[in-house]
Image (cartoon, rainbow, N blue to C red):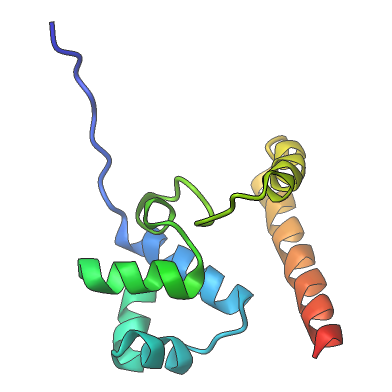
Amino acid sequence: MKKKTSLKEIDLKKMGRRIRTQREAIHMTRGQLAAKLGVSSKFVADIEYGDKGVSIQTLYRLTQILNLSADYILAGDKAATDTADPEIERIKENIMGPLSACSVEQLKCMEQIARYYVEGIVGKEE
């Protein structure tokens, strides 16, 4: 007897949001991402707004540039590629665990706190 599996659909708006969030997190402009991808800034905007999808080649380039897995970009399943460091994974799990009890509003606050924190750290290193 075959087991039925439901296949996920790609939500281009969510995919675009994940791309934009990571691009902003690494302090990259749309123009910079477009140049690395070999596409126009308008096309990157279309991807980020969920108006356009990407080719396999562009998806592969995005994984390398943004250090995200294709699974994460497409479906939000896994965050980063090549995180073989178990210490990093343990820390991420310790951060994410308590957040599962938060409301949407609380998560939005935490997102902003994390952005400010990362921006402060990056600013001090430069």
